[in-house]
Image 1 (tube, helix red, strand yellow):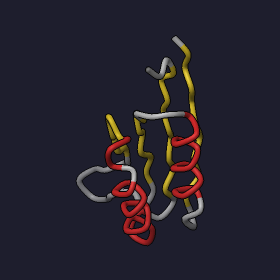
Image 2: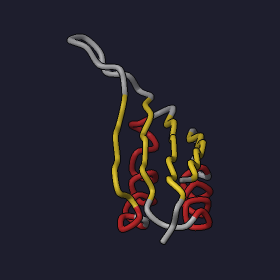
Image 3: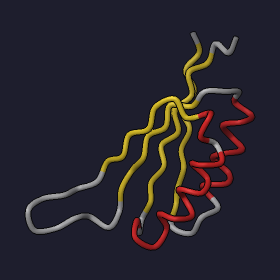
Image 4: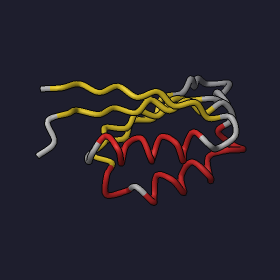
Length: 86
């Protein structure tokens, strides 16, 4: 059993341009994604072109690092990892 709680914070600077490539990585690691939350600014007149996705990752830190590297290789995407030990 993995005692680490792994969260990936993924900032996508141009959602319309990069969403397809980011989603391909999410699909590849679909069985490792326990929770996925997407955040972006939206109101009655505009929808932000950038956004943040928070991933609660199920698996090893090595698997999380591999996913972070793949999604981080997409142009306009920045990834940060938080690891909490229990």
